[in-house]
Image (cartoon, rainbow, N blue to C red; front, top):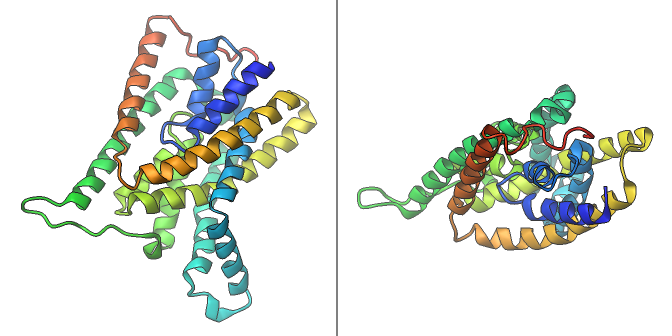
Length: 291
């Protein structure tokens, strides 16, 4: 991998990780369109450490409060009813599905799941799901002539059942094209949570999963020696810088705006991808030869 490739891929990772459009799909597509080798699941997992570092810094006050309350609750029973302590447990519970499925389907994630036809399908299908979820949220918030405004849930109302459902939604992002934030935010909106609550929990829930995946891939890569460390580290730094800016923008965006621009983008990109593959302009396995 060249330094230019790593710069572009790091930029793409930072721009797309927190938007509901799938960073893994865009890394895969960037390589395919540019005629580069597929950066692979290991590169994706390692560069995601950079974007998760951005999450740790942006939500540092929330994270410090949650970790502190959770640790205290282990020895002080009176703290177990504290919302922040409960959030600590809910992040752990919500991380179970992706941990189990990630290990179970590791070979598929690094192989068949990266087929461009599957990516095109997930882009479109999850785009439609996000559109429906967004429309339901907008209807609740706006009310109507014969319909009162419906109060949506906040994270204070999050329980184990909803936490697990969020976790299952996050696990779907193991398939490129689904989008971690897109799946968890869609799940949250369909369960009746506000956009801000769904996005915030989505980002917090991703921390243990992404860091664990990154460390796991770092171990494998260091033992196998199949990663270009200089360019990969450079891409991770770029992803961190760009990712922090995107988080700050996205958290402000969702308080007043609809997700429909992302829905439309996903569907158009998925259809375009199907056309390119269907007309043999692009191979469904483009760039996979060196994985």
